[in-house]
Length: 219
Image (cartoon, rainbow, N blue to C red; front, side, top):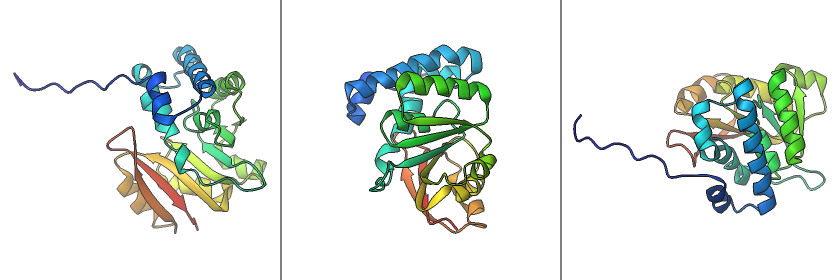
């Protein structure tokens, strides 16, 4: 329509804006920048993220993951906080949390090429993270003692499936943090038919339609 207002493009958001928003050290920011450079280098070969997202990588992906950091429960007194990232892909959100010092992170990914990227990214950033080239369904049997204080996932599967994946992997007092979109209400309806759980819905800092689900007391 003639004369219609065009939507304003989002304000630029890069390392400087991220550092201001999350008050990270220069060392941590440098590690995140190294990760971003590596991701862009590998992306043309194994399609880690959509190429159209690359110009807004810091807001669309890195900030989207980093917003989980203040929502993490306190670490146990006798060991680091243990985090399992289901279907880690390009490292979102688990590797970003590891770079930010969230604790001991286990990255679960079945795609061998993505695991190769994750392994190099962990080495380059010196993150406290371990890459497991496994299907999620195999983790509990292969590592029966691996129990998470926090389970995270982003863009992986419907909520009911995420809960089924998480139930055998989480400590009794643990929580799940799942980044979700606009269909969260219908996903909750389906999941609650088979699972009892305590659910908090928190607004996303990066998307008006986005929701962070904080889930505990799964049974």
